[in-house]
View 1 (tube, one colour):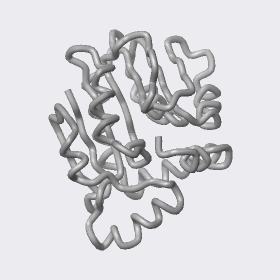
View 2 (cartoon, rainbow, N blue to C red):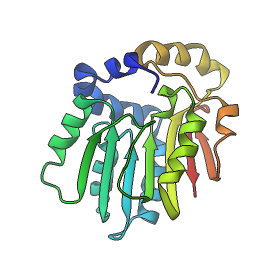
View 3 (cartoon, one colour):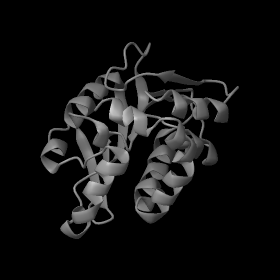
Length: 204
């Protein structure tokens, strides 16, 4: 991870406000990316599938899975923020086959198995080397597994003038440059939305 400054951003105060702010962001800038995520989940989940989410936060993506009424065998969410995980665990307390662990996703350790589906949304812009992370994470996929990512990428100039400084100030994040994305292995689909500010990638 990029360090303690990012950890502080997702501490108690941000964790409390994360869900309403994220829903606002989705409506303003990421609605099409969220539609892509819903389609991906519908096409790739069933009762036999195991899921690993890298940077699960307050588990909004797991909420989406439940709202879509999709089955799965197991879900493991990793995040480095105990405050975000506290909210996630409260949401899904008592849910069978759902587990959350406090981990730096760049060093996930022994997850116990490989997974059918990997999810990682709005994490890469906090990492020092997104391509290294993405390529290493693929080692956690089963043969035939799929990896879905959404992240902040270099926007068009009229957004870049104000969006990049704002993201650095408020979220300690920076856009993932195209040359970094070009280092991702096994990319099968890539889409840009919202003035190039939002990128969706599928790997398999």
